[in-house]
Image (tube, rainbow, N blue to C red; front, side, top):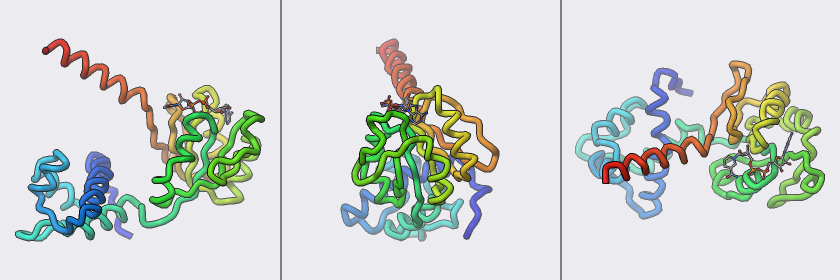
Length: 213
Ligand code: NAI
């Protein structure tokens, strides 16, 4: 297993975009691409692309370009998409159910083992064959089933308590949708999706543009 700790997070954060574009190319049966063509598609400069991909040992060949399939697989491997992850969703409301219903996560190896909620109307129901359990069972379930990833889709007021339960149950990572910054022990990884932050950037840009027009 190669270690990528010396690769900057800025580069890592661009990898999912490469991965997505390479998948689209493969779907279109394009098997070879130059950094210039890739640049035209993705919008990063060709030199940026060469630099990014060089961090991982340079996949390209002078005069040939990149082998799309190889590059796609390799970026998938770097991102850790070459194995299965066990997950649970905590908070089975609008967002929790939407995520549970989204087929792509399973396709990429993120297996959902259960949803958890406090609402007695939801507990006992199923989303796509997956049970909604009482949140009181969360810690035991995570421990007994070696769950690696907790997906937090609860109101923000309870997100820290849920996090503490997950951490005590040896969770490895948390995908947090609640609009709050969680406190976790340092060996636990949190990736936040603060949807409204991105929306507010959009509103900023819209207003800047209307000032210029
Ligand atoms: P929701 O109200 O539909 O669902 C929240 C669920 O959490 C409910 O089913 C509730 O019973 C459950 N819950 C409450 N306390 C709990 C606890 N202690 N343990 C387990 N479950 C508990 O809300 P929604 O819209 O699904 O949003 C969930 C979270 O995601 C919120 O923090 C929201 O700010 C955030 N969010 C929502 C987005 C959306 O598009 N709906 C987008 C981005 C973030």
